[in-house]
Length: 106
Image (cartoon, rainbow, N blue to C red; front, side):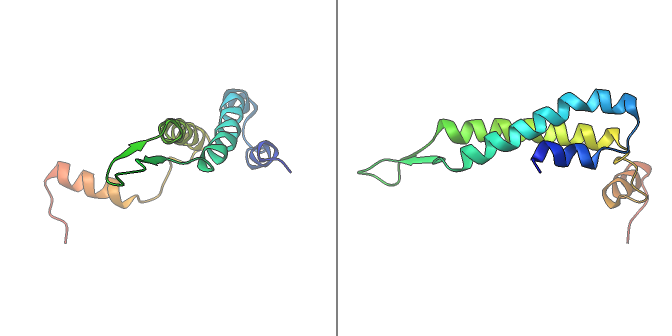
């Protein structure tokens, strides 16, 4: 089973209108996953042959970072569309709400 098929299986039970919205995102997610796997095989740092303290970030590292950010944004979007934002009690949200209201936490 391909990754795209796995993603389709994960989201098979959601509303048809939501499926239409997330289909392009699922395509992007599967593409980005493949591309990021390819980039992982490449060096991310170039070391100067005579001075190992001189190092440069490679294009592969920069692309991986960009793809990773796009990937996480797509994952967040898909997750929120399937109701993933509905957490019973998020400790971070609880803390922030406590700070906003001025109450002290133990």
